[in-house]
Image 1 (cartoon, helix red, strand yellow):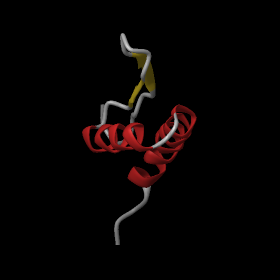
Image 2: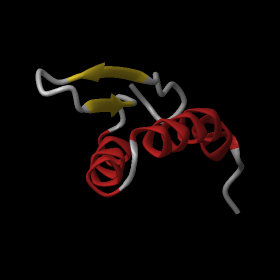
Image 3: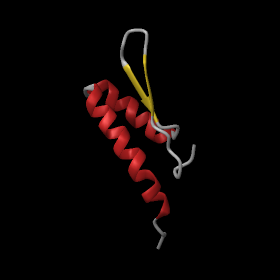
Length: 63
């Protein structure tokens, strides 16, 4: 995956914990951090927000 094409994926561990990833290493590490500190719905909301806004960040022209 690239910054232009994050793909939101989710799964559950054997213990029932939510695992969310986008395929972008920096964002995946951030989501892993959020998973340890916040509720599952918060992590899903953040992952969705990142997946929607990442293409916009990548398309902005540099000055």
